[in-house]
Amino acid sequence: MTITATMVKELRQRTGAGIMDAKNALKENDGDIEASIDWLRSKGMAKAAKKSSRDTAEGLVGVYVQNGKGTVVEVNSETDFVAKNVEFRKLVNLIRKEAMANSTIEGLLNSEIDGKTIRESITEKIASLGENITLGRVGSIEGANIASYVHTSVEEGMGKIGVLVAYDGQESELGKQIAMHVAAARPLALSGDEMPQETIEREKQVLTQKALDTGKPESIVAKIVEGGIRKFLSEETLVNQKFVINPEFTVQQVTEKENLTIKGFLRYQVGEAKS
Image 1 (tube, rainbow, N blue to C red):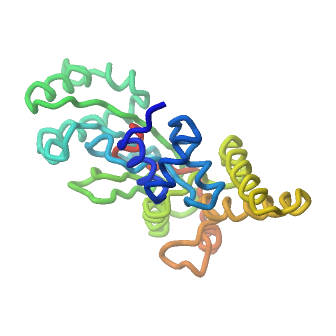
Image 2: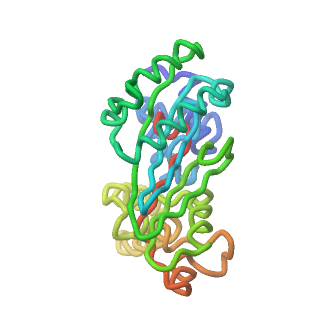
Image 3: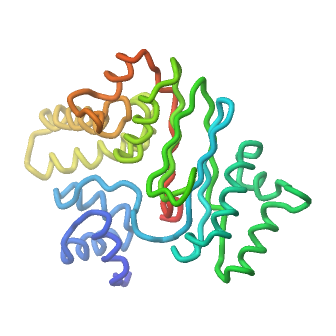
């Protein structure tokens, strides 16, 4: 398979690997980006790569909270210029609010407001703004309390990153701070129990290969992998992460002190769904 400059660039952006290391990884894995990431990590040439941060789409994320429910939508445009346009922002505002009643893409697109579906409203904006516009994704969360946070906000409830956190307990400023933490720390799951098993297995494979490549005996490799998984879960699960506002404590420690229980979270970032 031909290894292109674009493939090398993407792999380097996602791993921080050097040019030759990226090329070799792609050659060893027939151009498969995800397999190349694991290969680089097993060789100690790259850190854990989360979802690609390359700019595959522009647009805005919109969040909306009402009566114990929160919704988050991603609406994509081709350029940031259009994403900043007031007409585009009006469209996002319409969609984020309507998502309260329709939290699936198809249901939301077919939802009718003032005799016009969301799909038709998007088509009109495509014609007037001259760019393709798509509804990238939609999600919702419910709970006794919902905290929201928007990073790089262009106006209320809209920005490049949107976060919702559901929690039990008294409404607290801590809820908003945890939403800010989620935006910055990018946890993969709420807790170890909720981490997808396929993610854990992939991490085990990388850790195992890395340990074997150093010549460690298999009896030691198992212990190394076990310790590596513990470290991975402490860094990638929300309740076990160091709280960004006060890193002396974990998120779980600060919530327990306030008698709060996090029930779930959603984090959307523009372009993530396209990567």
